[in-house]
Each structure stands twice: as C-alpha cells, then as structure tokens.
Amino acid sequence: MFFYRADIPHESRNEFGIGAGYTTVAVKTLKDDACQTEALALLSEYALLKDVSHPNVIRLLGACTRGGPIYIIIEYAEHGSLL
Image (cartoon, rainbow, N blue to C red):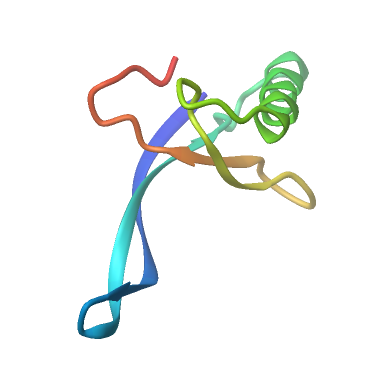
C-alpha cells in the first residue's frame, strides 16, 4: 500500500467572510502489483472506517472504490502513525 500526503482546497469562513483554505489529508491506495488479498484488506478498512466515529480513530473523509484504483482519503496524522 502507498500513502500520499495531499492538500485539498476548500472554502472556509472567517471573520472577514469566505476565504480559501486547505486541509492536509492522507490518501491510501494500492501498489500497481497488489494482489487480491491486499485489495480486500483496503476495502475492509474502508468499510470499518465509514462506520466508526471516535475521537481517537482517524476519520474517513472520502473514498473512491468503483471503476478504477481504490483510494481512501483520511485525516492526516502529522505526529502519528497511519499504520
């Protein structure tokens, strides 16, 4: 599996009105030569994260699971491990 760090643009509200901001996220995907077992493990992780809401668990922000590579977008853990 690969982890990427990305900055996603978004609108944010501040005391001066609406402005642009960025959220740093981690993107988890499979290597090109990943086997079926690894793909199923990533999909299982996605299924778990979409149903869990706890302050000590990385939050799922989005996912792409159909029609191509699997991508899971999660909170970026700046001082922690994503494993």
